[in-house]
Amino acid sequence: MEMPRSEPVSPPNKQIFILSGQSNMSGRGGVTKHHLWDGVVPPECHPNPSILRLSADLQWELAGEPLHADIDTKKVCGIGPGMSFANAVRERVEGGAVVGLVPCAVGGTALKEWARGEHLYESMVRRARESVKGGGEIRALLWYQGESDTYNQHDAEAYQGKMEILINNVREDLGLPLLPIIQVAIVSGDGRYIEKVRESQLRINLPKVVCIDAKGLELKGDHLHLTTASQVRLGHMLAEAYLTNFEPSPPASSSSASKP
Image (cartoon, rainbow, N blue to C red; front, side, top):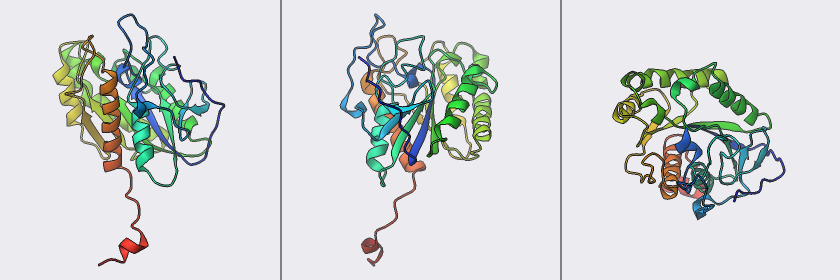
């Protein structure tokens, strides 16, 4: 059962996060082998009035699971990392800012389908640009993709160079030369070159790009997609990476600042 969506809203103080990649970002947690979502939403993924999502028709609305239901439309979506990430960030950031999520992930997509000029890339950039029109700031791109690049050795070994190009292109096209990027190193894949893709992901060394490792997170019976519990954990890992690396520390209070 999907969350009912609210009337469009657009508070000006949004902290905006782009969610992109393929199925483990859009979420298959709780999707059964019969291609049905079980409807179970963990407490960490519950909706909150301070967490919004940009819908497929570019309207801000209350965010709820499945977060990518109107974006990744060719497959059944379930729990992904986005809501647990947003709740964790909301709880830790001071000032009452609203978290705005821009879901863009589409299952079964290879990195070449996210190249500049391709539909998925251009849609992601268009949605990101639209997200700031009513106010707010894009704080980071969260990226989890690569399982579809494990089929052959060439794609796996070329992953690093192509991903670095994608990062540079997104930053250029959004006019954000130091946009923080948090990438997830894959734990599964469709082919035999999983470790090659992981090596490519972990080798990326660009300013304000960090990589967290999904290795060790539990997979569903299909040996490809993360379980609901793993998606909750991944959301917390993404939040910790963002807060540790990119969220400015709150200023010290006057009382603490006056202490020796």
